[in-house]
Image (cartoon, rainbow, N blue to C red; front, top):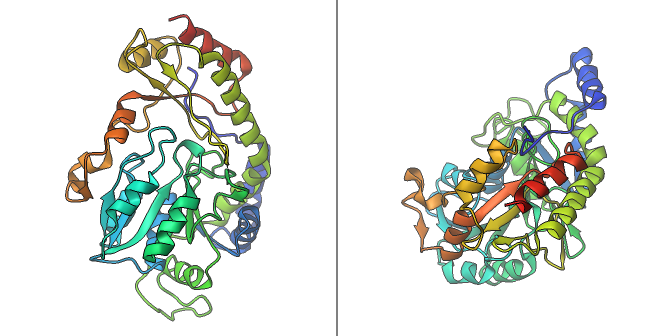
Length: 363
């Protein structure tokens, strides 16, 4: 089976993890601090906070930005549920607005229409690995004095107008889950240039303790720390990130050339001002294709090719999010009915990529 994802793990990650294990210092120690320093330099930010998951990163970022009960946070319904769950975790209310039908990212014009006196923040998701229009979004945020949080779970190493993902908002949140471009199994990171946000995040993930005092509690907190084992793996992954990005982009070019003239398939749009890192390679299957999307999924599965729909259902349609504020997001609904992601990870061989192309083209 040609899988939709496959982490790039080799002897270097194994050796790094084993070194930590043999050291007996396996919790949050010096390796975590080294990772935080390296990752902040990688993104071009002043601060980074290593954390146990991307969901925890979003939760912590909202806490650090003082978002709480009674506040509204504008975001997209066309994403993974963690984005919205984090808003609920701090007691705030998600406000879902529509997406740009071409990039799949949140539509800045729809953001501005949704702002109320209760709006305190915007969570911007860089879907599939391409940054959203942060220039337009930042202008809106400044106009209404809103905090911008970048959900960069899918966009490590992506670039918007010369600036790295992770340095595009007040706070940025990464995920290093097993399917992400770089991984340590589970894990996350917050990056920021704001010292106050950094300090509050550090306290929150460590039971609310002062950063320089044991058993000195400032506020409520949780145990959301990353281990040195995970940090050691990520330091090795970070060394490979440029190669991983290049491989994904190379396969995307091959796919684009093969699929661009096939009736019923729309290839991904790449903005002129972004560097798309292709966490997912996502095509659209329109009514003009000989098979429906579900038929194509089944056909490819039968041929040994795994695919996924990211995402088949808008977030406000789930029971625990039905009380959120939203209008009918027509572009997001259409996308959810048409998108299909194909394998694009660097573990693929060119032979496998060509087999995927030939299998689809033959239809």
